Length: 508
Ligand code: ADP
View 1 (cartoon, rainbow, N blue to C red):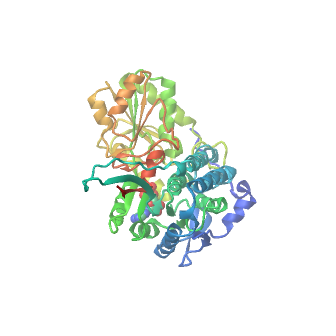
View 2: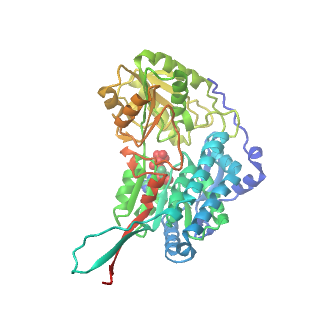
View 3: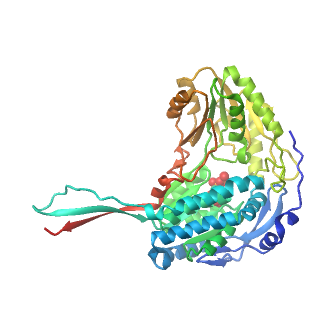
């Protein structure tokens, strides 16, 4: 495996415009204006490939959340947003999607230096899917419909009623997002909230605030009115916690760790705000004996190593039929050996660093636990060391369900692989043996068999002969402790809507 990590000096690679943008502390978007933190504080943002500072951003806290919530409330109750037609709202959201595409290169560059992912991947995946999300959601405002309902209510003889439901926006929405897909997570959250007519306070991850701040500029350029989207940069324990607990926020939508998800639920209890959660995973990926081996090997490699394993839906628990186990593990190890680690701005890079020192320490500690508990590292098994937070793609075999590497979400490029003998209840039980239930993969040439197995897996998404296939139209979310509610598709709209039933007595 190529672990040589060339760290370019980023300045000449990002262009003058972006370099100038990064040179001044980036303020927050509150009520349509770029606003420094009330405290005057800023915090540094680092390139995870070098550990070097790339920018300063405002350090928002409870006082800034207060201003942002007030702005969102004002924009929800009055101003142009609530009086716009659905068609007008849809056009603004569509325009935002267009602007994301127009600025694709710049946004992908920001993802590369802030999150560490390869720029070409950010361009093809993160930016494209973000634009798709806005374009898909731009069609919904004109199609969110209620129903007429025939009722049998007791009434004086001769009385008749007309009853109908009217979906309405839930109100002021707090949204808290993680660092693994900074722009895309913002798009997944903002798209449906805008489509339903809500107003928003978005708290971005402290590790990766830059692309969302640039998106904020595009939001204003698209003509989305002041206060409809407010973007606060700051830390989870201060800004995030204040947003989750705020009494004038009607709903909180969170993507992140299951541990913080629990804190969000507690914080939301004060005013019983609506909650949706997209949390962790430890997804099983099952290769049956009759699978197309080349496809399955490529697919299983991408399932776990895409985005450096920093995907809540990573296919991190591999189950392979015993007859092909060695070939598959060797095949994935051979693919892992080809992965070139490097800086996200280097076009030859396949895999960048983990996002932060904290994540590097977490993942390498889990790797150490794997070694200590007796797992065998077929490849990788350690961090690279030196500059940046690079970790070698790792495959562990000889594992058992009690090992931490098998039961815990690692959020790094680490696969645990074990053989099975038959597609039976024991395999299904083992695949479902997790507190999580986000995603699963099945590889087989017998699609009926794969379908039957898919039905038995407790997961919000099952991919057959593919993995990581996301689409703005497809609902995504988790069973069990992987979350509440769904992102994307028509399904996500219900997270942001209230249903009002209106009954009118008709004149006799
Ligand atoms: P990860 O472990 O992947 O960093 P987290 O769940 O810690 O993910 O973070 C996801 C998001 O949640 C980030 O925006 C972070 O700032 C925020 N966050 C962290 N702790 C809290 C908290 N106590 N209350 C609200 N938000 C939080």
